[in-house]
Length: 250
Ligand SMILES: C[S@@+](CC[C@H](N)C(=O)[O-])C[C@H]1O[C@@H](n2cnc3c(N)ncnc32)[C@H](O)[C@@H]1O
Image (cartoon, rainbow, N blue to C red; front, side, top):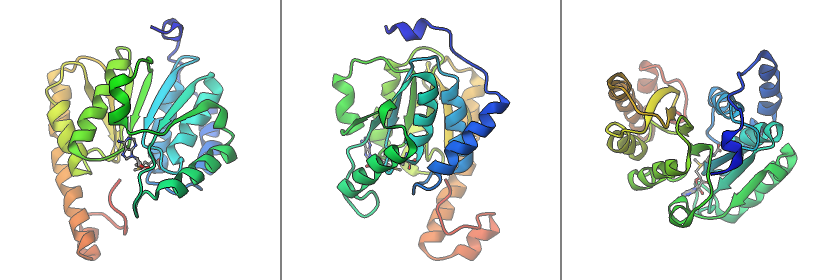
């Protein structure tokens, strides 16, 4: 176990953090991606509580929108962000040109020194992994099997650690993974969500915590319905259920 786990952490978020986050978000918001401002703030607040010297793992970095937020916090904590992304090819994620943009964005944001890029699939890197972690952000491949595997990275976290999952109760694969792997788990507690970013802790859940997951199912079904409406170009109907955007609900 690393020494930093024994150090005093858990600093409360203060008013000065509002200003720091604003400055950080100004930079992050220039970077294309799916993270909303409120979700960026949740990433900020949760990582800000980490002890000095902490290690964060981000699965799925794309162009670095979320990495820059975590990197900005890491700079103030003498912490490290492990940004794991194989930069998969294809229309959505863009392969090597995306990697070049990612590296340039880290440089522009001044966080290159605190971000360690691991160019690998999370599912391939995990079996041989040995390093302790303090914080986990999951935003990689959104299918059931990958999300299930990504949740197994929690074995490297201490009790009470934070796990954030993007596209929870929005993506079908991610949500089925949560229902199958978290609902009945004895060491993972669902706390809350900011849009589709769900917050979990590595603690023993109570019945009420499990019930909170079940209560998100209607919101998930609504989101799947909205995605279908958008695919079929039925945006006016999506507006009727409160989704006034051409983009999927995040
Ligand atoms: C939704 S994007 C991440 C967005 C990023 N967090 C942001 O804030 O903009 C998903 C990323 O996951 C990567 N990816 C896909 N499969 C992966 C895997 N098994 N492990 C790690 N990353 C993966 C893709 O290359 C892509 O860059």
